[in-house]
Amino acid sequence: NPKSVDLLKTCLTQSTQNEDVILDFFSGSGTTAQAVMELNLEDNGKRKYICVQIDEKIKEDSEAFKAGFRTISEITAER
Image (cartoon, rainbow, N blue to C red; front, side, top):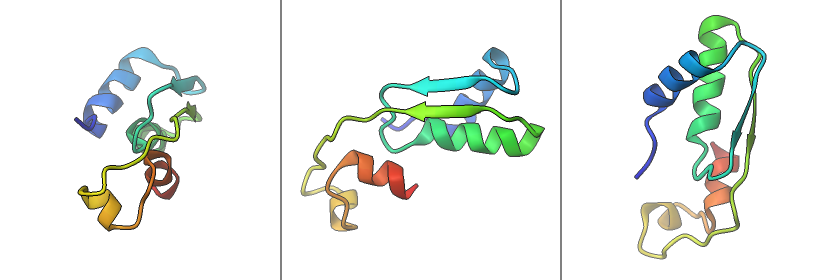
């Protein structure tokens, strides 16, 4: 299941400082990166993020595949 951007922003607010680096080893579609960017906009933070995602194939019957994506990391890059 996708992670909630709002939940991640709450976790980041409670566990990071404005110039921390956040590492996401299972980045999927990039929700953590989005949460970091939104939080930085809200509080003028300078957090950075590193996202890692293996080159996992997308199932052919999924909406993402129908939209032209072939791997999960392609979704992350687009996002």
